[in-house]
Image (cartoon, rainbow, N blue to C red):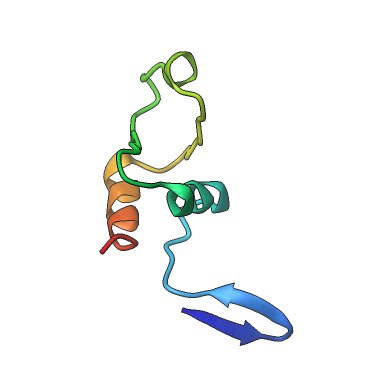
Length: 71
C-alpha cells in the first residue's frame, strides 16, 4: 500500500528488517531467480554476484518478513 504523507510517498506494511536494497532486488526477481538467506559463516562474497548484508537480523526473522511479500 502506498500513501501520501506530508509530501512524500510511504510504503506501509513492509517490515523494517527488509533493507531498501533487498526490497529492490526482490522486485527485480523473476522465474528461476534464487535468493539465499545465510548466517555470518556463509562465504557469500566468494560465491555470489550480489551480497546484501542484514547484520543484526537472524535468518528466521528475515524469512518471516520476506514471506509476507510473496503471494
